[in-house]
Length: 77
Image (cartoon, rainbow, N blue to C red; front, side, top):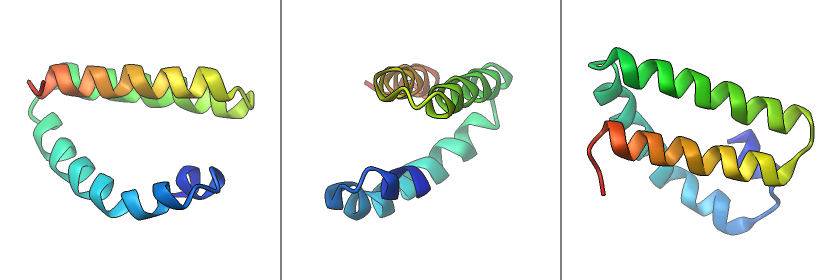
């Protein structure tokens, strides 16, 4: 939520309830897979490192990678 608020983008704030729903389902499914859990933790670490560096492009790309990993692990196309 803090990241969405930091964007100062009203669309992101309206999108958050949908994202929360998807995240909740994804977390429940990923707990069934050690590989998915490790990938998620690594992805989150990478996103946070870019945010700490105030590197918006790096954070954006790290988030894309995270979403692609999640889609792959959860078999979503």
